[in-house]
Amino acid sequence: KAVGLYKNLVVSEQGTIFVSNASAWNVYKFSSNGGFIKQFGQKGKKNGLFYRRPEVFTTLPNGDPIVKGWHGGLYLFDGEGQFKYSIKLDYGEQDVVALTDTKIAISGFVVYKGSKNKYRVAIRDLQSGKEQEIVARFKDFAKQHVSVTVKRPIRLKSGEKKDHPFMISTGFHGARLNSYIRKIGKQNLLVGFDDSPELSVFSPEGRLIRKINMEIDRVPISEGDIQKYMESLQKPIKTYINDDKKGEADPEISRKLIEKIKGKRDFFSPFMPYYYYLLVDSDNNILVFPYGNGSAGRLFKVYSETGKFIGDCRMILDDYRMRLNPRSRKLQFHNGSLYGVFEKKDSAGVPIRLLKMDIR
Image 1 (cartoon, one colour):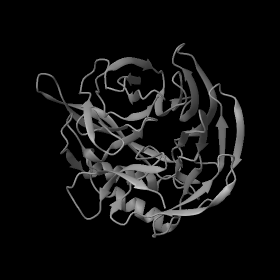
Image 2: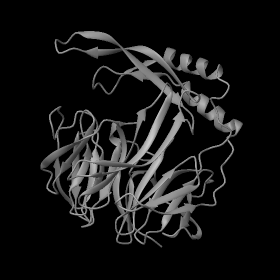
Image 3: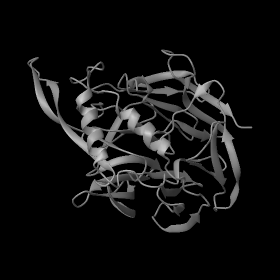
């Protein structure tokens, strides 16, 4: 995908919109009606600068945004984009949700033992820096992952190119355990993992309030799903020299990955995960997007805040393409409206759009 497609969106309680822009190493700030206000951030390795693609995660209730930082951690900015301080982490973060001005929830993972990853959700007190782990799950990623090591060219400060070992891996649906954390109610936390139909609700202090069991059936993985995935791997994979976006196609990488997959009996699990996306709307209803949508829009199931099933709905966007995956933050409800970043269909080269939609 073009780097310009990697954009995340959050809407503050005040209605201010922040969109992280990976192609320009900065964050845009918009009014609630989409009027451009300012942008902040630049590339660099110092505190407050972005060395990796910036990802805006959440905003505190006071409107301060939290953005993915550099070298293991998060950056807290004020509402005007001035850097305040960094939040150091000793594990890889996946998502962040602000519960109060002093409490945030963080989902992440650490390599545990051998080929096992530990996926965790914790609540951190910003004043004391202490964390309370409230959920921990384990998954052996070796069964449904394959990887190859290639020589990737890098450019030294002198301008000289040098080969550097680089690992490229791939996995099918279900290979990674995806966690979802969302704010629900005034300041509670909703937690889910895509290998289970069960959701949990916690208080800002980490107390379990309730569990919600959703009636969702897992979709079997078909031969067509497997064939489509294998065909996608046949396209030569590119390697890059530092920030050169063009890269060089290397068909040998694809061949080696396919060869390893064919030699692995348990690479494809028999079922898809239970769902691929989860949202909470302005009325604190839970929207769950299961696999097996069909073609007429995106099917989702709606549950109340207490877990009562309300019904099935579809999200239909006639003129726009919506890319949703477990890591994306492209949709958010605020005051009854749905905000999102979308691609215009059949409009190659047209920048993605920031949209505000009324729900019918």
